[in-house]
Image 1 (cartoon, rainbow, N blue to C red):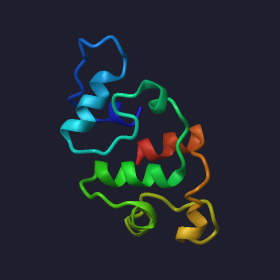
Image 2 (cartoon, helix red, strand yellow):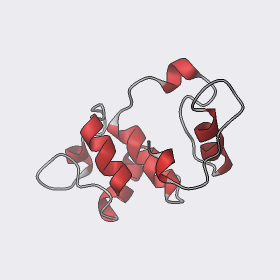
Image 3 (cartoon, rainbow, N blue to C red):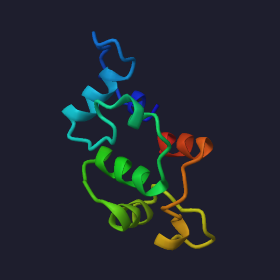
Length: 106
């Protein structure tokens, strides 16, 4: 869904439905976990990984707490706590569907 929010995704001749999206991410140097591994690509991800994907999509490649800090300082997320912070972001928690929609809308 996140990649689909961007223009230019082409259908792939590959039999796996998401191949075109992975190719799009690869062509933009996005580090997408599970590329080429359909089983891994279907696993749930935590909020830190989401921060890494979103920051990569906006042109910076931060990891871990640095990705979370970027999200918070740029207003791309407020986290789950009452005060925006790395701890309040709850990076080790799994992403909920409703949160995924909010990240895509951002």
